[in-house]
Length: 264
Length: 317
Image (cartoon, rainbow over all chains, first blue to last red; front, side):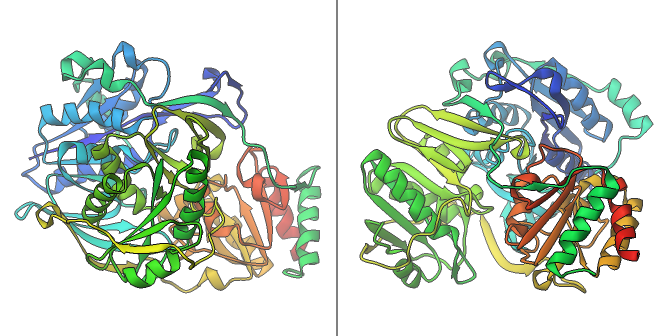
């Protein structure tokens, strides 16, 4: 049995940043493994550790060469090997069309032929929250979005899981494999990469493929959704700022609390 | 240019976002000069349809199949209704369930999808407004073609007035049971514990800015000194540094205290959804551009490890 996990390197802006054109300037960005994907990786790796029948966990990413550093982190945490898809038509900014991304991932899934796919619920940067379910339906597979408890029965090939709904309510659901599960943070405790893991990751394979290799036409990665403008949201509030050093700020807060009558 | 909006319900209750979707759907229909159709699928569709038959709506379509949300039923029903009413725009709530079928149904209809939309302008080509980078920036996206789907963020549109003169009809939809591969077997309440924050009048809430579990003592000390209840943002609960019943936000508790002090909390939309009803919001954060300051009444740009000890001292005398 094989498990596939999608991973994405995401950019996060520093506290202070500047926008040029419709992008945050590169020098203000830091790159890291998407937080949700960290939990998806852990869920996949744990499934393999707990079941002898799971032979392999394969990571898949769409990203430029720079993202290999991040992919190595997933390899260091127990993913066995990775596939990275990238091509010239994908340069020039984030593809914000979830269906277009799903086309590329689906091509890799069809080639790898796993039994289960784990993805993160969403990515820290674009926050589409749609790629995993789009992928599942494109494959003609089942799925569950926002999974925060997961138990897989290898004999019946049914996943018993919880979906985290709003307001502290969880839906208890059974899903038939093959299926895609979008994994919510908090479902497990993602491990830190051990030194041994980091060493081993250096010799694990990252297969680099272009669109031709995975059999996806360039027209499929043409986004129907185009980023036209990016700006810092205007604050709608009339926040009253308490200036000064820490002591003065604390005194200011204390005054508000006394004024509101919640503390004396 | 017909618009199809889909309502949402759970455990017998129509969710608030349904009437917000009516408002947003009316806006979309007005922008594009068309009718607004609303779909209500599963559960007590008769009662739900009565509420949804707002004057802003042309026709409500009832799909009487099953009790609770099932993404296979929704995907099939919405795909068929979109075709049968001749819709060219689809509007779905940006909720956990909305995101469990919107990508599938738009894939089958082969129309582009923009999620978590907070505003749009559909006079001509669609321009949708949504956030990126955890709310640090807003973006305007242009969507190609005249057919598309958006999922709308809850509470961004005013709810439409319930009830009215819209037509209510039984939808002509065939659900193929062999295509249903998931079964909802029940619901569980996630958050239980010693304190119910939804009842609290004064909350000191802590976020990622605390850095390490050991540092929590400082915030517990502050809450004790002030006589406030301790809340937290999601990452701390995910890390199991605090129990689930302390989580404030979309998937945790919705709180309405007199005073809410957000310490080291950036103010992601999921957190804000749970605490924006507080009378007075005080935010302490090192990052002056943190979204929490957009909704704070009182802002302190500073290091919590400097400010909090001083604040404890203020009240310890």
